Image 1 (cartoon, chains in turn brown, yellow):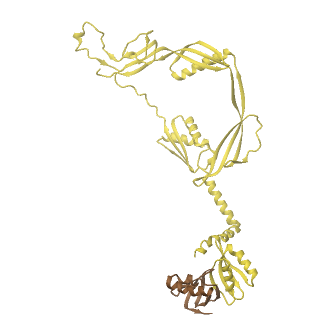
Image 2 (cartoon, chains in turn purple, brown):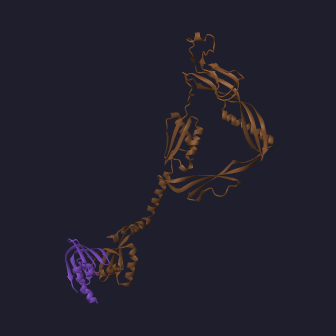
Image 3 (tube, chains in turn brown, purple):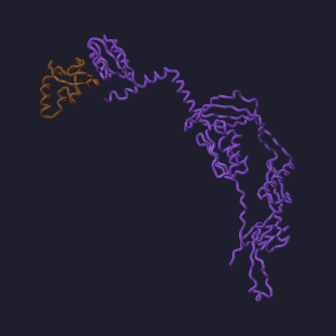
Length: 93
Length: 408
């Protein structure tokens, strides 16, 4: 049953034009220049240091690297990161 | 950022979490609904972040469950400011003192203004009178009488004043005076007659100008011409036709006093028994602070040692700047009173009734009228009251000026 649901979801996104982040439980990442990264729909913090932020998602991790990181705001499923962002990387786990 | 709005008002704390993987502690608290913001990595084993003051108990709970050390660093917001403020006694003291000072200042008269077009000497008189009542710059507002009373007192004490308006405007007392100017009676200018205003029998006549139309002992009705202003009014004579050209009427303002005897019938009722209250002059004063309906005594305790008490209280609100506070100073005067009973016989009642009727009539007619005689026409005793029906004769001036309209 779960398999069927998982197969159905990309199809829903493709043909019914439903927002993919909602349907497929994917993180939505908004990046404003090098200043801010706004991540919604993540599954929790894994690592946070001055120059690295790693967040759990449904399929692996998101790794953000840069320098002088500050978490401006932290809510259960949202995070706002401030600093000088160098790279955003998806690590499948 | 809605979540951290108002955090300054409710207060927030910067906590430092120390332990293995400190971000996990923050993740845990976020999962439990605690908003954390401005999170920073402090070192290899520590993290810092802001949390609301109301979330501190939750943070403590998590700390107990896990192996982390928490230190509180900065305390910000109004709750901390207040507690810091109240910890300094001298600061609180000076704050209270300054409010008391403003209270004190707001309840003092700062200025007495006298306006109105008054001559200097009357203005000075008013000022000295006011001083005598205790109204001067620097006096307490609630120790002095209400403006209406002062107004009354001033007009009584300074006869030159026709009217005085006393107004209390905040901390200034404004007085507006109108001087009494003796205005000459407007005389009817030009030619006029004197006519009777009441019916009566003429007793005496003093005519200084004009032609008298009536004689002593004549009975006159209201409206009858007593003294004519038309001179040269020749009664019909044989030479009428010849004199027609000469008979130019000369009209003058008639002047004179016609004293006639008039009469009045008056009803009076006099009770045989009378109860009245008399203040003996013994009095005690009490002061209260009143908040709404509650009165708190501040001066004058115990009840007075007289039996019948007349209460009289004046309320004056305490002011703060321009507002009246809901707190009042109540001054209540307890005066001793005596109940007086008065009984009289029927004869005494009749005498009193006649006297009363005469006084009333005199008041009505003015000081020039002279009551010559009175007679009891009928008297009856009903329900403890004597009813009198009096006949009073008066000698008074009944003449009134009436202008002669030319050309009729």
